[in-house]
Every structure is written in structure tokens, then in C-alpha cells.
Length: 97
Image (cartoon, one colour):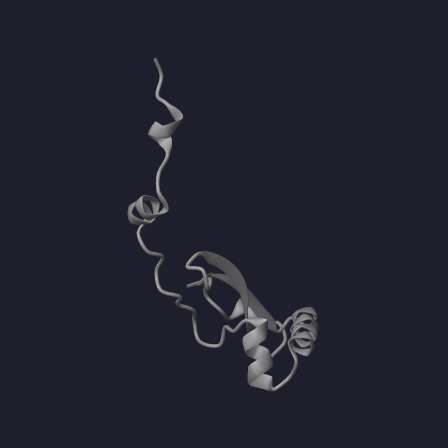
């Protein structure tokens, strides 16, 4: 006979112990989420999102996704943006981490 369904059940604690912790949230200087940019600029989130979109169109934004911890202990990826003052420099002058 095969294994029972219960033989494959694992608790959340067992799974987390097996996977280990996610590395601490580390990001290069200058990369902020849209929400963080809105606080930096003293604007609404929507205004920051629109300005980031416009800067992306102008070619002065570098976007990367970094893993973040959620309030319930899980994790998710969130877009982080770095804005370069010179057009075209966002991709060309920034080596990958």
C-alpha cells in the first residue's frame, strides 16, 4: 500500500525550519519603493507613482525587485526605484549586484 495523505502533511513550523530564514532585506543605496519616495518628496503616493512613471519614460529610473517581509511574517517582492539625474544612465552605468 502507498503512503497516506497524512504522511505528507507538514506543519508551518516544520516548513520554516526546513527552509531557514530569508536573508535580511538588503538593497543598494538609492533604491526606494514608491511609498518611500512619496515620503522622501513629501507627496502623495499617487503623485510619486506618476513621477516615477514619467521618469521611467525619460530613461532615468532603474527598477529592481527586492524581497520584503510582510506584517504576517511572510514575504513578497516589491519594486524599488533609483532615479539618476542624467537620462540614459539608469541601465548603462549601474552594474548588477
